Length: 243
Image (tube, rainbow, N blue to C red; front, side, top):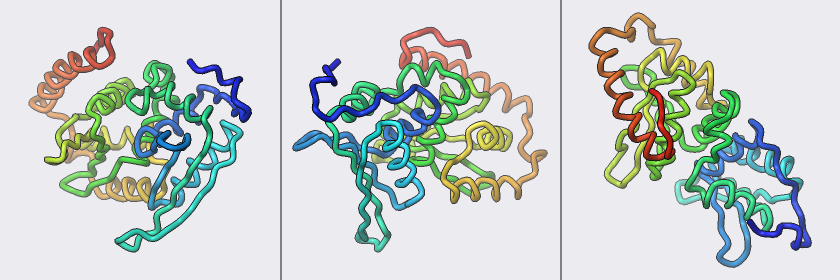
């Protein structure tokens, strides 16, 4: 652990609460830690709501002023970039997340509120709501290990999901597709980003619960899936897991 006090610009060390958990969800989901030339923490999004949330939370919990810029990309979308420039802030976040490769144990083993806040931030950054034969919530990421831990936390929150291959580019996703599980996700976790929250609730309102109830075959498959996932969770977390 670096000696933070030796730096002239000292930022605050965040409290390990639901607000910090949400911030880390955004960071691990779609943020960037860069120290090629200087120490930068950046977050880029087409959603101003998310970019401003990242900026405002980061400024408040670290006591450090960042910057927001906006530009048009090649598709003529407005892209908003948030940048914090701080060696100490960089090292705190790098150590906390092992360079964005690990979800901190205080979140994985935390309260329902802390787990839900992290997942909400991650899904705001990387999640989508798909209208197929039901309301599906998809959370995509290249790091399958990250998604397995998110799946484990969802399981602890009473939400069944699967980790599947999303495409041929090595992207995986957590998929929540059963109506009762999507409804529980919205009740317990939800989306902070308004457009995703509204879309999910609109799709849920169009579906009848009776059409997606559990039957015997589905219950057996669900139980078998959990048995297989328990072994993967054990490998990722390094501890026995009860499913």
